[in-house]
Length: 68
Image (cartoon, rainbow, N blue to C red):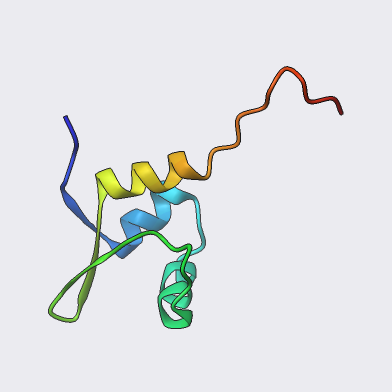
């Protein structure tokens, strides 16, 4: 079951481990690789389920064939 709760900007920063102004900067720059967000009036919210998907899409899985 997905968690579609909307969370505030500061909560999203904590979950992602980013400095507070980072997501606001990315939105201002209109970066295509930023997490999807919802505008509720002037407020910015993030869906927990979409943050999970965004994190998973950026997770690097090492393969056994890789050598360092």
